[in-house]
Every structure is written in C-alpha cells, then in structure tokens.
Image (cartoon, rainbow, N blue to C red; front, side, top):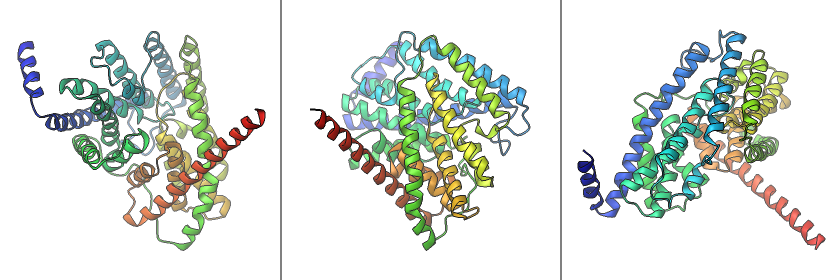
Length: 429
C-alpha cells in the first residue's frame, strides 16, 4: 500500500506545475469544507452537553438553562482548557496563520507539531461551545491553513505557492463556517498581506467556493441575525460621519487592547489557575447576564430585539472586558463576532443618544464600522455584515461608505500618532 501511494505521488508530481497548483487548490477547498462540517457538529455536541441544546434549537443558547449548569459547564471548560493549552505550549510555540506562512519553507513538518496545532484549533471550538465569550472563527481559518502544508508537500509546490496555499486555506475555512465565499477572498488579500493578481483572485475564489459548497451540505445558509433591510434615506447619509466618529475610536481602543492582551497572554503554569478562575467569574456574572456568553451572537440579537440604554452600556462594557480578559489569562479564540456584537451595541447606544428609537440601520452601520477597524479590512467587514444579516444590495453603498470612512479615520489617527512620537523623539535628540 505504501509503495502504491509513493507511485501515485510520483505520478502526480510529473504533472505540469500549474495543474498541480490547481489540484492543490481544489483539494484544499474540499478538505476545508469537510473540516467546517466537522467543526459544526463538534460545536453542536459541546453545546448540547453544556446547555442541553444547541444554538440552532432555540433563539438563545442559554434559554431555560439554570445558573448552576452554566457555572459547572464553564468551570469544566476552564479547567480542561487550562490543562490542554498549558501542555501544548510547554515545549512548542502555537503558530498563528501568519506564523505558519513564515514557516512555509519547512518542507516536512513533524506529525507531532501538526497534531498539536490541530488540537489547539479544535479546542477553540470546544471552548466557545462551552460558553467562552470569544469568537469561533479562528479555528476554521487555522485548520484550513494547517491542512495546506501536507498538500503543498504532496504536490511539491514552490515556497511562494506554499505561502499562497496557507493563506488561501485560511479563507477557505472562514468560507466554510460562515458561508461567505466572496468575502473570504477579500479577507485573504486584505488581512494576510498577499499581493493581488487576477490569477490569485481566481484561485482563491475557486477554493473558497468549493469549501463553502461542501460545507453547505450541513452548515445552514440563512443569515445569522434577523434584521430589517437598510432603507434608502438621506437622514441616514447625514448620520454616517457621526456613527464613524463615535464608534471607530472605541473599536480602535478595543483592537489595541486585544493586541496587548494576546502579546502578554499567560502561557506558563499560572494558566492552570488564571483560566479556571476567570471562567468561574464569567459564569457568576453570566447567571445575571447570560447573553454575554458565547461568541457574541446572543448579545447582538438581544440588542436587535430591543433593550434599555443601561443594559446596552453594561453589555458593551462587560463583553469587551470578558473578551480581553479571556485572551489575557490564556485562552485562544477570535474577535470577529464579538466585534460585530460590540459594534451593533455601540450603534444601538448611539440611536438612544440621538433619540431614534429602534433604528436597526444605525446598529448595522455600527457593526460594520467596528469590524472595519478591528480587522483593518473594509471590504471584508462589509461582506461579513452583509452575509451575517442577509441585507439587500441597496444596503451596500451605506455599508461600504461606513467601512471605508472608519478605515480612513483610523489610518489618519495612526499616522498622527506616529508623527507625534517621531516629533517627541526628535526633541529628545
């Protein structure tokens, strides 16, 4: 059997290089889609074990769940997560997607390293399913990128195409879980720093659409959030600068704090205490505010359904605090869906300040503004909000304008900050 496999490998490696590259792209899209299906089922299983039902069975995952059950579930998740992430990081470093891209020149990665990276990514889904207040999107992206390395080895691809395959795999993972294939293409180029070309755009699109189509056999395609379509309105156009000026600085602060939290993440023996205690604290607070649990979906829907200003402020502050603290004390996860929820809540608070009760359009623009800043990717942010909420095409001008205004504002703020520090350094000299 081994001999037959080796013959098959040699046979495929005799193919013209471009054909091998296309085959690698197609196969990575296929396996990323299958990985998305696996993660979907895993999330459902963990949710049912922790809460008695999955998020697809009820409007809110915590509906009908006693505080005692939530506390036990979070404490168990905290203890097991602390043990697993401590063991995984004792001798090796956990690689991010960009870290995998930097190591693309390693032709043969050890099976042990591969299995550790896989367990790390899979466990993020387990943690979110058990109620951890962070995003689940990191896991499918990392797994898609991780699977690129053996395929690149199999087809004997060049270094530049190995890097390209890893980045594309991250996009395929995102496309599978959230069913946003075109947005995932933008994500690959905007956030992973790939040089754009028509050839690469076509190849990444092939991968993300294959992945999304395969995952669609199980992963549902309806929008994640129930929202009205954004209507055409001159008043809404006038509100755009106010939305951006109000929410973009908050998003920039959250992004900066997130970066600090991940840079100073606890990885040594302290994680064995810090992570379980943090999850226990979150469980105690969640017994009063259960919508804070999970990746932010419950919080965003709660705000869309309508709440008070006081509750909105409390949810915004506590959700941001929980995400930052969870990442700092040793957990891993994404910030995409929490950012969406925070932006939605920020938009809601702005409507209350302006006296525009129940304007979901401003909430959506708040979410795209927040995402554009935290991702530093306006096209990706627009596509994600468009896909998450099932908006009509007439909402695109509003979403795009808000995303690019927020992105432009943050870039100017960053340049001003760099100039300020440069002037201070020159004065000292």
